[in-house]
Length: 610
Image 1 (cartoon, rainbow, N blue to C red):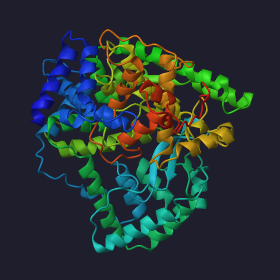
Image 2: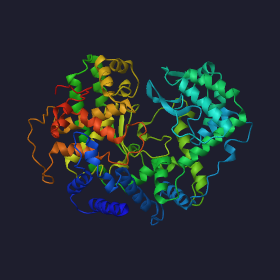
Image 3: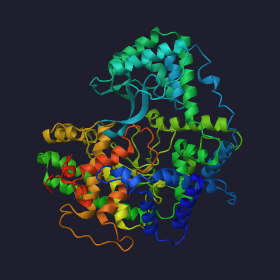
Image 4: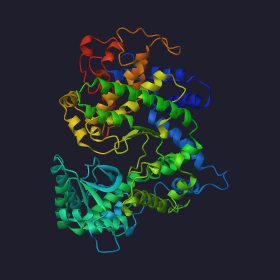
């Protein structure tokens, strides 16, 4: 039955995207089909908006990802091009090998990764890092300096705790416990950030063979005075070095093997066409984004025009917040914030500035790879190795700086970024191309639908620049004392405390939800808007619900889903209910009792009286 329902709704999506169906009527059909009118919107708005979602059994992200994968499968199985670009042929071969790889066949771990010389944990850790395994004993990444967002450095820090626990043998369990205890011991410490040369690192933390580690990682002898290292959790690293020096080498080797096997299991796709597409999008993001942009995406110009227009409106409303100066900031602090807002960039797709690049750039980017159509295991290891090599390539060139026209995000994820995200060091908001599909976005939709969903998404990400972590970064992506001074502001701290009136998995995400929804609402309806005095005219495609009610419902239904365990966010129902209840106009828009309308009211940037 569920498959039948899914099929019917898929037909609606197909009609909207391929025919001249009225997309606003289709959106209203989706909204109405998910509603559960037995629930009061004032009591549990998520349940009201999404209560019938499980009966419809369509997950929005799954829908968008499936359409993306279908389109990319068609591209990569098209053999009509007799002289395809090198990049196209490389990805086509990788895809063929992935689909043809038997699901039951295990990916063998190359013996050369850990053997070949006397075992030494720093060398082995660096060798595995070259193939993507990170966070075993510490996190390492090629990053930019906290005080110069164009200068490349190595970033070293204590690893985050893992949610998944390996079924380890007894000796490995003891090591795992010791490492976990060490992480937890240093978890709550206020860790200073240091920017050292490699020479200084060796002096300060002699317990670890850093020369060996970086020689293996970079495949060259690093210069003590040229390689810059940005490190926190210094005492953790000292104790880690002592712990691992005293550990049995055989235990350490087996532990690394287990962690590598777990990583491979997570990164390996199922041998289905759709799984292979998503796998390639994570490991080879530049190539896959370029092919999708070139061969599939057809509405970039209009989409970008609308997004830029919406983004400009959101920034304009936030600028009014700053002018009204709820926090009573100094002129210097306001100048800092206005500059950050004015210089914020919006990027459509995780791609370099295509106006300043050409096909040779894309063809040459993966030039060192030699993917074949019949050996997925070799291709898999090559892709992992290539990604890490490209991440660390600037570190092999002393003095190299970020070339913004070639910049794209190339991180260690094994699941592609399909939701919008904000980068503090670039002061940049990126909307992935996968996201630019109905029901998330369609340029033909009425503005109430675009602003209530994409407006919230852009507002949420914009707000990350002004929460307790993002506030530290200036317009160029550098951390400045001015940001810390603003964070210490009494009213800023009061807003942080207010937002924590109920437990949350992430304070910064809740702030972005609260501020992003408020910003989107104020931008669409006006900062001086008062639902008590405004008489709404129904839209021609919807006569029953008022525009604000449609705004709230379309926002909420972005979160209709299966409610899996959230990572770094509250559960979806909590996010919707908390954000809506914080928006004082919500209670008026749905005629909620007065006691409900006075329940929260946390404000950070927006003057509460308006």
